[in-house]
Amino acid sequence: MSLITIERKILEKNDAIASENRKNFSSKNIFAINLVSSPGSGKTSLVERTLNHLKNKTKIVVIEGDVQTDLDAKRIEALNTPVVQIVTNGACHLEANLVRDAFGQLKENNIEILIIENVGNLVCPAGYDLGEDVKVIIASTTEGDDKPLKYPAMFRNSSVLIINKIDLIPFVNCSIDAIKKNALSINPTLKIFEVSCQTGAGIHEWCDWLENQIKNE
Amino acid sequence: MSLITIERKILEKNDAIASENRKNFSSKNIFAINLVSSPGSGKTSLVERTLNHLKNKTKIVVIEGDVQTDLDAKRIEALNTPVVQIVTNGACHLEANLVRDAFGQLKENNIEILIIENVGNLVCPAGYDLGEDVKVIIASTTEGDDKPLKYPAMFRNSSVLIINKIDLIPFVNCSIDAIKKNALSINPTLKIFEVSCQTGAGIHEWCDWLENQIKNE
Image (cartoon, rainbow over all chains, first blue to last red; front, side, top):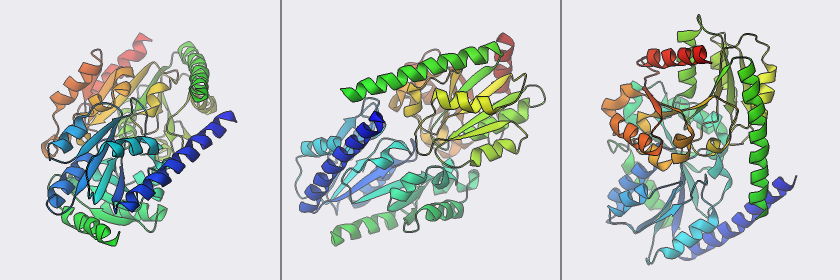
């Protein structure tokens, strides 16, 4: 039982730091997103699309979480957006203290949106609050429509579901209606967007919603 | 530091049971595969294709690992193949004791191939030996070609890479050559197959290789 106790202590410590992060972001009127998904679902592509759509209107900064490499941070940097890369060195999820330290490295003022791109993992990040306002989960049509049922914790803990790669629907064995139905059976309050980061379809609706969140802060 | 000690103890205990599993499988001339990938890369589809291709020639049994649901086991059962479902109840990887117990539930004789389908997760299962002969990793073209660099431990610990969804190459921003180059830069000894579980392309070559492994046992 000692492991369970230690795990609980780690989670309690994480939650305490996450609460501090949340207070800090709130005091600065920052809307914070914890972006989660499987590897390759399109988290970085969604961030790129979002930056391109909103960069002249909204001050956005990004924290990238990866097991290895700073490939994603380089993609964000190429869009002239302030970004800090967290390399977890094998760890399977971000924790609140890493986000606190990474945020501390950002020297920007008047930030409106903070996007935290978590490690690509549909299981472990579900249990770790980072201090975000919303957890946004991406599910791609190429992954099939059963993922909400098979990885329910992450869908339960998210506020927004982005269904990505809708341009590939003609070629894959997946129904968008089934993804929605399965996701809503786990979490009836999910706000759902359908997008293609390849074609840009649906990005406008997602960004409009995002802008409204700033106004509501 | 106590957590690290406990983690090491868990891994040591897991490795000891994995060794027992390996001896057990070997004594029965069973070739055991630990099948790993992101969620939705096509693990269950590959198992289905493999069963359809080899079921009249080879005695195959399957252990399914999932965080929740027995959806995958039902797909395998529909092919009249002996299968045991492990539901991890939120845990992000299989461990050797779960595989030992699941294998104990299979009442088959003369098994030639055991396929263990791990939880969909490109990070955590890398550290847990199950007693398999080979770890087989699936990477789909829809996930992009940078995954070997971003999740190196799993590619380093695998013997075989199956590149799936090659039928979608015309529609996605991914190069098969780049997946191979990136994967071989992490693990130069990887045996690589290119398949489509949708069209059946490449399944023959993979199954031929698999049959040869039985003969070599």
